[in-house]
Each structure stands twice: as structure tokens, then as C-alpha cells.
Image 1 (cartoon, rainbow, N blue to C red):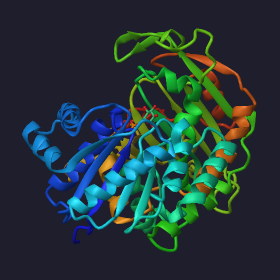
Image 2: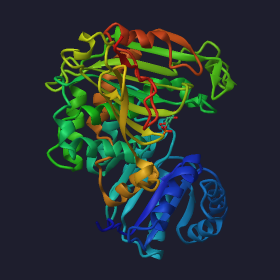
Image 3: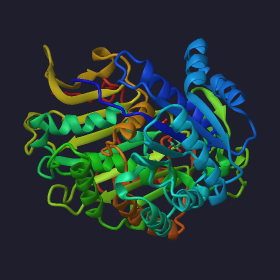
Image 4: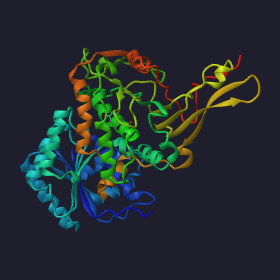
Amino acid sequence: MTARQVEPHLFVIFGATGDLTRRKLLPALFRLTHGDDPPPLDRYAILGVGRKDVDDRAFRDWVGDGMEESGLSRNEIDAWCAGHVHYHQAGGQETEDFETLKERIEALESELKLTGNRVFYLALPPPVFPTAISSLGGSGLNRGPGWTRLVIEKPFGDSLESAKRLNELLHTHFDESQVYRIDHYLGKETVQNLLVFRFANSIFESLWNRDRVECVQITVAESLGVEMRAGYYDGAGALRDMMQNHVTQLVSLIGMEVPAAFSADAVRYEKIKLLRGISPIKAEDVAFGQYTRGVVDEEEVKGYSEEPGVANNSRTETFAAMRLQLDTWRWQGVPFYIRTGKRLPRRVTQIAIVFRREPVSLFAAAGARDTNPNVLLLTLQPDEGFNLCFDVKVPGEPFQLRTLPLHFLYKEAFAPSADAYQTLLLDVLTGDQTLFVHADETEASWALYTPLLEQKLPVHHYAAGSWGPTEADLLLERHGHAWMEPLETGRYHGATHTDLP
Ligand code: BG6
């Protein structure tokens, strides 16, 4: 396959003096042009826009310090920054500031002989999105001499109402085809591989339905706590920070129907359809939690309410689990259990497809204990790969069964994959919206979760280092299920044996 063509362009980053710029965006843009197989890209420039009063040189130094931490060579970074990175100081996000910005953009484009293609990346705090969007429109920067694309970081709204308002504002100034809403989970290779796994391997597709599947479980666990982000996180919580976006993206990719084509329109259409098919979530199908002191990775850690910047009576949930019912022909009656949380025992994102048991337990009839159901475990991070667990006979006597995995590990087959931002920024530059969230998708997702936020559900405590509050276990137990403890790819720790007495 040939590398995709990237046309000459100017990449403008608003909020350029924030950490995202030097930790993620610029390293990703640098790697795009320094990889083994870089896309042909000769004329481009990056313009950081921020409030700080610094010149190009000071900005490049600051950027260079941060980029070096991503393991890149300082000499190469400095040479690259000197050739491509510029800075523009703007007082705020008001239209007058955008008039001078427009002049700077046009001057750079004519000096560097760029053709007027522009990306505007809003790496800004969400409360200033609306002013920045209106000012881009007001100054005419929403339509340029070439293509103009707008990238928006998460969170996209904090409720159905606010997401709708933001979409309306965007659509006043931009066409949906110009808008790239980022969910960095979609840029992870293994998340994209879910589509390939399902739609390039027909054996799974015939099993992927209510006839064969008992339940689906999705765990997105982090061992880290809130760190220094209380200012944002305490007002957001796990539902807004992780569930509404990242976890819900995984639900759509696992649950969606086969798209008509591998194109942005077709894939996003199916995801939206799936989200709209999820029944309203009942309060009894939800468990919220907040971590208290505990031990993670053998270290004692503080409780959430003791973290810097968190009020000691905070009711913010750092854990959320729920049972979703998909009202679709394919999934009727198959619960999707989803959970995410901070300060859980380890960082792991895993999807378990638990298949139905055999209708008659042949070996139990001979006096053996139960077999285990077949489970397909898709691990998205770390140890990316999958386990397909099934029972085998242990050789010899007595008659015993053991559950073992067939496994595939990405790192055994491939070199480490690109960072999610690198994948997503290349997509923006080549105009591919498949891995970006459509306006209707944001609204369908908020429509599901906003009623829960309005109900002020109880928040239960769980010790840091545990898998969440017991209420999260009860969610499943009531329906005869239990959470699968996330496993390492290639292992099956929970093997129970079926022994003949
Ligand atoms: C971000 C959340 O979107 O995703 C963070 O705001 C979270 O709270 C992070 O830690 C997790 O991303 P990853 O790629 O480390 O799984």
C-alpha cells in the first residue's frame, strides 16, 4: 500500500502553551515526517497560538524541552522546530484577536508558499470552545482558500443540552465534513483492529449475536488516581470523563452491524444506529463509586477526597459500572456490562465476549463439576491481543478438564504501533473522518447518560486497589453473571477443572 498523500498546509494549534501541545501533538506531527514510511509532505508549517507573550524562539525551546521527554533526539527536534514551528500571541479568543491572527496566517502562507489548506486544532479548555468557534467564523477563518478542518478535543459538552448547543454553534460556521471531534481511544491500533477482527474474520461474525453470546463485559481500568487534574475531574467524574466517550466507543464497535463499506459515513452511521438502540438505563442498573485509601502496586495511596484540589465532601464518582440493554435484533436479551474507574488494581482495557454454555453438560452427567463457558478476551492495552478460552482434556487419569487460551499477542507479531495522536492527526491531514466522532454520535451518547447525571445516584466507596464497590458485583449477580477478572493475554489464571471423582 502506498502512503497517503498529505497536501501542503498550515496546522494552527489554539492553546499551544498547554501540555497537550508538547507532550502529544508536536511529537505526533514530528513522527509523522520522521517515521520509516513518512507520507510525502514537503511544505507545511505549525503555528502555535497562545496567550503567553513569547517569541518563536522561546516557544521552540519550551516545545523542545517537552518533546525531548517523549524520547526524541534534541538535535532533530531543534532542527525541525526551526524549520516548521512558529508562534503567535493572541490576547484571547475574541474576533479582534482573530483579525490579527488571520493576517499572520496569510503572511506565513505567502512566505512559505503554502496553498491555503488549514487545520485549526482547539487544544483549549472546553468553556472557551464556543468563543473560539464563533471567532473563527466571525473572522472568516472558517472558510479559507484551500480546505479548512477543525479539530476539537474532548470533552464535547457535559450533557445532552450542552452538546446540542455546541453542535448547533459548530454547524453555524462549519460543515460537519470539516469537523473532527477527537476521542483518542479511536486512534489506538487495537481499537481499530476491533473492526478488522469482526469484519475480516467471518467465523466470529456468525457467533456474534444473542443466539451464541451470554453477555459482553467491557473493563477500562486505570491504576492511576486523579493526579493533579482535580480542577477538571472533580466537575466531570468517571461518567463524563471515560464512560460517555471512550467506553461507549467500545460498546459501539463491538455491538454495531456490518457497515456497507469501510468509509467514514458507513461506519459512523452504524455506530449511531447502535447507540440509538440502547434502552434508557435504569438507576438500578448503575453503580457509582469513589476510591478511599488503599494499596495500588504495593504502594499506599490516598483516598480521592484527600487528593489535592478535591473537596473532602466531594460526591464525584471515580468509578462507574452499568448494565446496558441493547434493543436490537442482534443483541436482544444479551447484557453489556461496562465499567471504568481510577485506582483499580492495574491499567487494563479488556472486552470479554462470554459465549453461552453447551446445552447439556455431558461430563457433569458423568459426575464432573461444571465446565467454563468459552470466552473471547480482547485486550486493548497493555499486552494487546486476544485469548480464546476453551476447555481441553488434561492428559491421563483421572479424567480432568482445564480451561486454556489460544492467544495472539500483537507484540509477538508486530513492532510497536504508532501513538493514537499520530494516527488521528494523519487522518485529519488526509481528510478521513472514520475515526472521529460525528455530531449525532455525541448526542446519542449524551442522551443515554444525561438522565443518570440528573438523578444524583448514590456514590459508594471502594478501597483503592480493589475492582470497585460491591454494588458493581451485585449488578451482575442479580442476573446470574460475574465480572471476569481481566487476564494477561496468553494466560488463563481462573481455570477451574472438571474432575471426575
Ligand atoms: C482521558 C481521560 O481521556 O483518558 C483520563 O481524561 C484518562 O482521565 C485517559 O486517564 C486514559 O487514556 P489511556 O490512553 O491512558 O487509556
